[in-house]
Amino acid sequence: MFFSQRSTQAEYFDSVRPEPELRAFYNSLNQVNRLFDFAHPFKTVVPRLFGDGAVQQLEILDLGAGDGLLGQLLQEWARTHGWNWRFTNLDVNPVVLGLNGTGRNIAGSALSLPFVDGAFDLVIASQVTHHFDDSEAEQHLREAWRVARRALLISDLHRSPLLYVALKLLLITRSFPRHFGLDGLLSVKRGWRARELKQIALKAGVSDPKVASYFHARILLEASRAS
Image 1: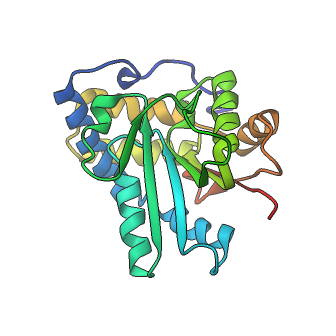
Image 2 (image 1 turned 45 degrees about the vertical axis):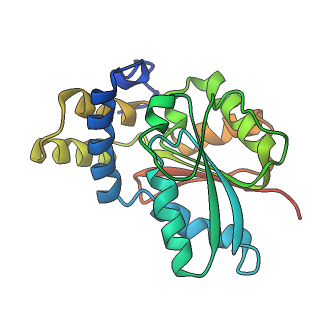
């Protein structure tokens, strides 16, 4: 079956790269993310997870935040509703964090978070979990759940032919750096199926994780702690 198993091939940008390459990478990534509206799942799910009365003030940890675009978009969107969402951005690469001039930026690993239990109302990650092998992904989710006081929301790529073809067509019609395009297609091959991510979440101790395909392009994992 097409893409029946996750690829284990390392991506070019998983290793240390010079700052000019990183800037070019995030410029391209942000174009694609905006085109695919990567913030949309969070705008849809977070209010439902918390409810109208509890969504107004949130302390949010963004794992693998990169240059912080997701947090910036969500913070601006929340303000249009009169909500105050405050973001802490964590990324393993301090050079990448330096591209984000706003928010609270902390260099650290998503596999060993430098925070106490229940430090944040909500922990999120977008297109990060596929960078790990299965055992690392389990540790990543275990740590994310540990520091999540109220809820966890993970958005990642769906390992599907539909997404792969759509991305390939986009790369053909747009001028992106070669390694960015190769990594993008490889990321889909390293993406998830819902049953796989749910099994890993259960092993990580996440309570009652709900995992499903989101418009055939992403896999969403959501979990809430009992009030």
